[in-house]
Length: 492
Image (cartoon, rainbow, N blue to C red; front, top):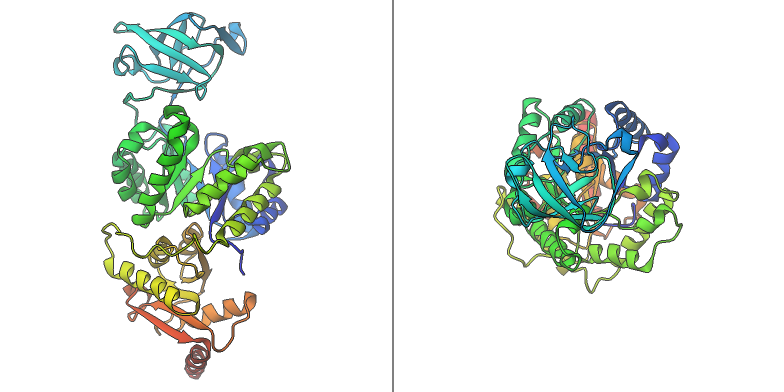
């Protein structure tokens, strides 16, 4: 079967190894989406990645992460070397800065000018993903008086988390804006916006996209408690969600992450939004050709939760075994998805209200039909990808072949569970003509029998009119109708 899995794999790409051969090898191994992290590349390097990926296969979607609004320590004073050592009990002042002040032994500067006003006495400040911990023991108008709870070597530009405290940060930084505008110019499909705290942050990104009339879709990265507190409004405002467990794991106790992940996944499925699980899924494969058993279980757990996609970061961006990591993740997905006792369609849950209820009901009906009848594939035509996304949300057992009318629609559906998007080069008025393309595609990688039953979701008014019917037909009758359509087209 085509690509052999329903769960999609997102692989992070770095410019230093992005060759035609490398992209082709990752794609053949099971990569579905390429991710670029703007925190680690220049615009010129990102452009080279996009050009390489689209040269290898223009249907591969590309996602770029913004750096997002985050707190960081400023650069260490050059006279002090690369790091400043601190021990538990040491006291320092913490001050805000526009980034021009260097951190020294007695004063740590952070890149948010107003940070002192936002942080109360008693707050915890976690530096470098929690490697160092400070406790605020006092404050003045100009500085926080802090004491190290956990010491260590403080290095330049390390991230800072303040669990449970709302910091006044911009929704979009200047660097984010530059990369969003770069994404518009370079045919990118998804923007994964970091540190989303509310729907306001998504609206700020969407405003930039709207100003350029861009169809790019926004994936909101959930990385802090504020994002969790407003998860419902964030899901509603987003195209999809990424559970970024790195920073989230700093703000939450480790034991709280699995339940938090599960609840977010359930909410996304109900809202028909793609959901991605990210961070250190096969991290040992950065240096080892084999994953640990715990990592395999972590990936398997995400797949059992029915996520749309799992993501690789350092494993493919700079690891020693990138192709093997993608192959491993794909093998895990294929093996877990064979468990039909668990992977039952989600057709009886209470689905949240959506803007296109007719499409949702037709999608549910198609998936339900596949549970009661020996349907082999679901076929649909879609202008925007919405019907394909809705079909994916019901997590049917049958592969969905989505006939798309634009590269962008094809690419965004590559992120949706169980959907194989294909592209037709021209639109025709006949409401059944997409089946010609679908059967031609299926014949290339699957031996269809004349008595195979297919479920068809289409629109009586063409792709612009949206889905309006579900049809069940065997291949013999579809081929006969296709032959009539082709003959009629040739006569014209």
